[in-house]
Image (cartoon, one colour):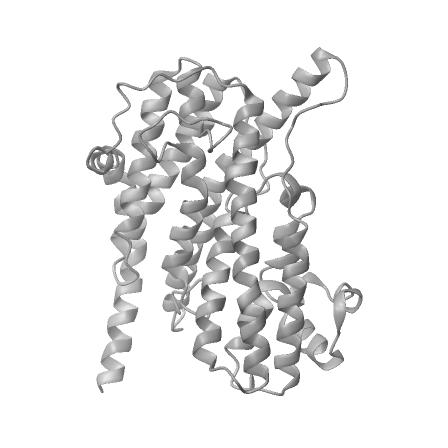
Length: 371
C-alpha cells in the first residue's frame, strides 16, 4: 500500500505540471526580474571596459571556454576507460562506474551547450550523443564485437557514444567478462578518439583583402551569436519543457513517467551543467574587466565595450534570473521548473530581438534549435 500511495502522489504531482506551466507564463513576466536583483553581486559601476574586437571575443571563447572544457572532458574520459576495464575484469564495482560516467557526461553537456568551431563542422554532437538510441543497432554491434578505431567507425552513431554506454550500464546483463562489457570499453575509447580531435583555433590570418576579412569575421561573430541564442532555446525547450511535457503526457496515458533525462537520473544536474556551459559566455563571473589574452570575454563585456550599456545591464538581469530559477528547481515541484523555462524564454527573446539589433546581426536557424 505504501508503494501504491507513493505512485499516486508522483502521478498527482506530474498532472499538476500542465496547469503550472500555463499559469506561470502569465505570472513570471512580472516576477522574473525580481530574483535577478538578489543574485546580482558584481559591482560594475567602477569598471572601464575597452573596445573589444570581434576576433578577441571569439578567440577568448575558444581558448578559455571550449578548449578548456574539451580538455576537462578528456580528463574525465580517461578514468572512465580505466574503471570500465577494471569492472570488466571483476576488479571494480558498478557504483563507481556509474558515478564516473555521470561526471563525464555532465562535463560533456557543459562543453556541448554552445556548439561552435570543430564541434559544429564535425557534427560532434550527432557522433557521440545521438538520441534516441537505437537499441536494435546497439545489440547488433554488441554481437559483432568491433575492436579498434576502424571497426568502430563502421558502427552507426545511434548505437554508440554516451547514450549507448549509459544504456549498457543500466542493463541487468551488464556484468564483468560479457560481450556488453567489452563493447562498453570500445565505446569509451571511441569517445576518447572523437574528443581528442576537438581543437578550437584562432580566427586570425583570414584569407583575402581587408573587406573580405572583415566580412568573414562578421559572419563568424554572427554564427557564434546565433549558437548562443540556440543554446538558450535548446535548454528551455528541448532539454526542459519538452521532457516535462512528455512526462505529463505519459502520466495522462496511464504510464509512470520517469522524470529523467536518462536512466541514471541526471535530469536536474544535466540542466545545471548546460547552463554552466552557457552563462560564462554571456555575463561576467568575476569583478574585473576581462582580458581576452587571459580569460573569456563574455557578451556582456563586448556590449559594454561597444557602449551598449543598457543592453548589457538587461543581459545581466535576465541571465541572473535564469541562474536563480535553476537553483530552485525540484523534480517534485513543477512550479520552479516552469519558472526556469520561462526565465530562459525571456532571455532568449531578449537576445534574438534586442541584442541582435544592437549588434546588427540577423537571427538564423541554429544547430541547437531542436525540433
